[in-house]
Image 1 (cartoon, rainbow, N blue to C red):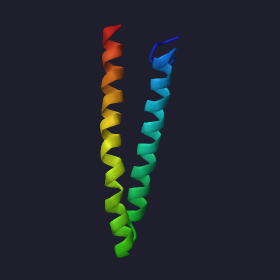
Image 2 (cartoon, helix red, strand yellow):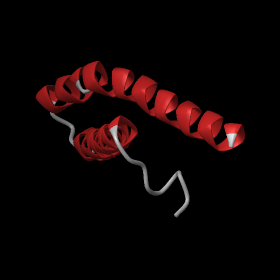
Image 3 (cartoon, helix red, strand yellow):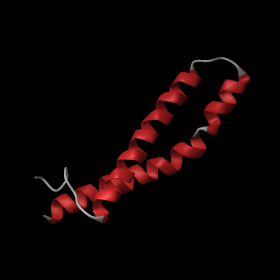
Image 4 (cartoon, helix red, strand yellow):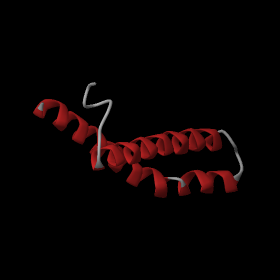
Amino acid sequence: MHPLILNTGLTGAASVMGLAATIFLIGLLVQREAIGSLAHERAQRARAALWVAIVPLVGVFALVVATRIASALAG
């Protein structure tokens, strides 16, 4: 099987964590957009507070992508 699809050992655990972080990031971005349609001041504050979780997850996502690209280029 292709190494980007099936990993073993600790790299498999890292893949699962990367996948979980990516799914969580997508969920937060969807929630932010859904809250953004509301006009209440409380909803707008909640939308701004979501950035606290979104920004680090974008960094994790970038790290996962960079790691995958580097491992694909390395062979």
